[in-house]
Length: 192
Image 1: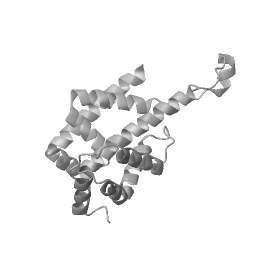
Image 2: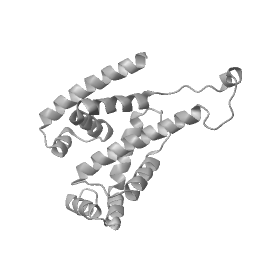
Image 3: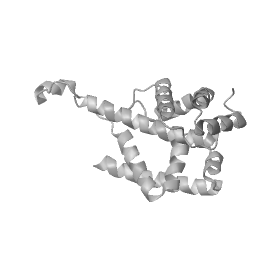
C-alpha cells in the first residue's frame, strides 16, 4: 500500500486506535519509507553526536509504538508528528545511555592518570536541545509543537498549519519566536 494514500492510512489509524493490532503493523509497513526519511532527518541534524542509523531508529520506534497502547492519531500528519516526537525521545535516550557508557558505566574505575589517555569529549548538544525544547513546551506548547514538526519532523509550514488548525502565518510567527528563544537558551547553556 502506498504511504501517500490518505484514506487507507486514515482507515489503518482508525482500526489501530480501535484495538486492531494487525492494522498497526500494516500502518508501520505503509509508513516505513517515510519514517526512515524522518529518522535520517533527525540523525543528520545531530552531526555525528549519535551513532544510531535510521533503520535502527525506525525499528526501535516501531517496537515502542506497537508494544504500547494504540496511538490516537487522526491523520498521516498527526502520526508523523507523534513519530517525530518519539524519535526525539529515542535519540535523547540513546545519547544519555552513550554518555553513561562514556563515563564508565559498570567498568572498573581508573585513576586520573590512567584515564587521561582514554578521555572522550562529551557532546551535550542533544541534551541541551531537549532541555530547551522541554522548557519551551512549558512556556508555549504550540511553538514547541511547531519546532518538533518542522525541525524534527520535516513537515512543511502548510502541513503544520493543517495539523494544528492554524494559519501558515501563525506557523511562521511561532517558528520565528521558538527559533529565537531556543537559540538564546542554547547560547546560555553553552556559556555554562
